[in-house]
Length: 342
Ligand SMILES: [Zn+2]
Ligand SMILES: [Zn+2]
Image 1: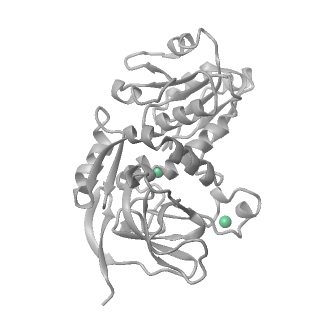
Image 2: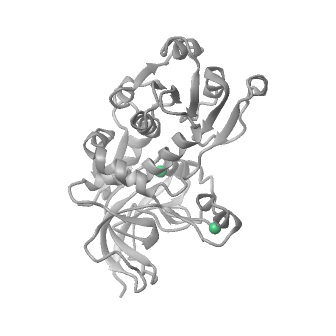
């Protein structure tokens, strides 16, 4: 009989359960990973509540993860059993028009953990070897699971196109907003401001980052401009699904600059295009990342100690319900919640 494992699966909207499923088999270009940590993402919560990408159910959830290699495909080079690795959930096909024109992260036949590949909330998962990187010793797996969030936050920061020494505004104090603030500060954007509603979260925006708690403000624009001496910002990133933040972002931008839409805004969104026209602004998306694996790993290695404060909870796989609840509703005590299997 094929060996079995525990996996947290979505069976129907809002119906998540621990299931016994076969340990997946690998192809010759893949690695079998024994999961050591998997962090919960806002998009996992979206999948549970709405399945916006129409994934086929049941489905093993999760796309952020790190672990140990326990089997290596016959054509794989550079990995051995026992290696500690981080993994990227996005698996481009390499052949479609997007892949051939430098946009593999937007591949038209994209395979992705926890959507159309089994996810990381399981004792084992499979990754194509080119989507894995060796993890140096000494970095806790729960922090290493932030690898892909760092990749996508690097993309969002890059899309803002703010030169060093110029101010960046991040709207939203969720895990992504806090990570972006740290990355932007690390890249020399100055000042970096994060706006949100939770002091608990804003306190973890990282050293040197300015924070503004805009809870209760009907229009925070004035306070956000004042936070940097009354100037406008060189770029704004939307890292909240609060749609009215778009108007704030547009109002805070300098002429000719970019508003980056990182948050997933389900449904229709009203936008004041008059401001876009009058200031010649650009509105751009940020989705996945343009293979920022090396830069993300370097940042992870450099900052693993400080990133640890973003992983506020570590729970075993069978406490998945509590973990998901904390990630969904624990704004005053949780940032990143990790399922750990160490
Ligand atoms: Zn994620
Ligand atoms: Zn492709």
